[in-house]
Length: 213
Image (tube, rainbow, N blue to C red; front, side, top):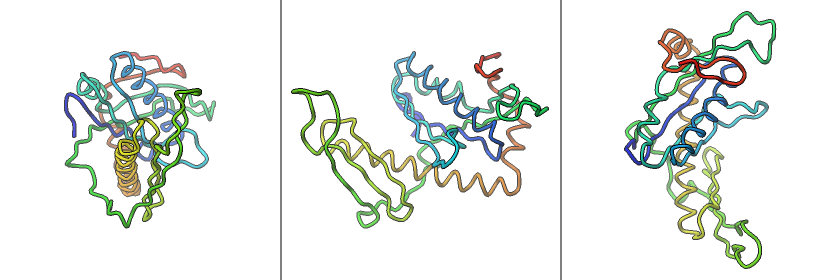
């Protein structure tokens, strides 16, 4: 769902190189900064990465008044002009990232039957002393067919943490599906060519990710 109170974005490097994944990291930090400034809650689920701290894709949820406006300000192609931080002698300096609005109609309906889920509870951490949460309110849910997990300790009630963890798991399953689609498109080199051809909505420059327009 994309409404005035909640909006979702897919930030993806397509089949771009490592520099594009670094740009994804910069974009996520920038969106989070703008969200915090506007009083909007920011959450990002990252594509599972192994040896690279920069994700190839991320699924962003923005919650709060004005989230729709913030989402629209990022939807499109983002251009990052910078010498490669990994290959100093690389001639290429322009890197392109896609940011797409996502609605519930395009989200998956994953197998979330009880038999496909493993739910575990544990004692949540938190402030010490008398305010320490001494109940097993933390929840971790594992999607058995894929092995993906999601955890929540944000809420004081176990029931609410289960809802939050389940929503995060849905986001991770969506991102996994989109990653698969991106790889399929990558095989034909379609998505990244589309990003490079598109007129960038926002342009940033340098390792400090300074916005030009």
